[in-house]
View 1 (cartoon, rainbow, N blue to C red):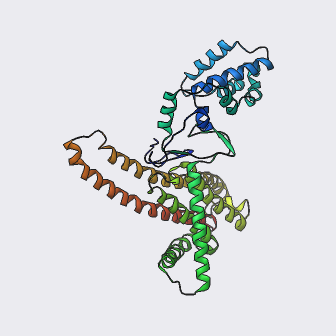
View 2 (view 1 turned 135 degrees about the vertical axis):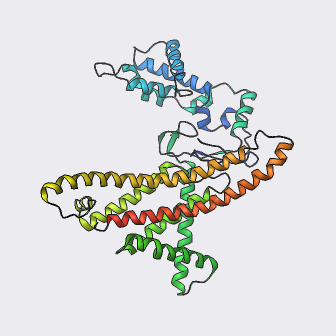
View 3 (view 1 turned 120 degrees about the horizontal axis):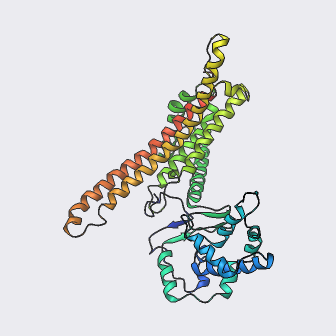
Length: 396
């Protein structure tokens, strides 16, 4: 589903035109660590080094030939292509036999053996890469700006291996947060200096803030809504900023990632239930899910129990749908644009000349629609969050 042009999928690198970030690496030492770890020659060297260390730690380790053969056979299984030997050993160590004991006791020593094998050792001892290989790797890496990972280790350019790894969407979200902090700090400072807002940006921000507060947040939550205004305004502008980044070439929208939209929905859930717990108590907030009904005890107990289960499921479902709605709308627009642009990929000659104005015009129109959707989805997310919080902080 990921597309390298529209950047729907998160990654650990930024992709730009090759002329902006050409790769002119000349030797093995010049390539980034993650790229060396993906190299088949390094993985074979790593496997042999790990086997030698395992053989020192345990006598039951198979011969190097059998060990390499089993690892390569494992790599041909579905989902294991290109995985290094450490992933193979980790899987062996996790296998259990009928006696609930490790099927390969020697494989449990893989962390200790793995720690003795580093990329720096390979750089010092490996044979120089051939010019043909370096040229091929430079062609692939041209246009890729790999994000440094000081706190973690990558498995590849799309998956982390261990630790805390910084992805492209994390960088973009931090960028949105920093811009919001600077803009609204300046906005608040200007408002303190003057009762009457002055300036186009001030008027635009003031109009958006007042509109959301008066027509979305206060009506949606009801009594006591003002204390939720700051967090819901923050949500609106954060979602809007992430959505708009999807319109910028070579960046992508963080809200096209389910982890981002789900985190925002969970935040709404925690705010609503936390505020409800402060008002009704830790048990009363859950009992508040059931509407108040005057029923005889014999009938009321089973009906209210069924309603509690239904409302509890509905509570989590509607917040999950809140995440999916934002995700689906941001991804769908990019996929439509991809389909339109892809129409001209296989065309040539007169057919391309005739179709090109249609393709460009349709792409421009859908880009304008995407711009509208970016604002609309931020509004809808804030509106629904207000309703959900209001439902959690008021009696049914």
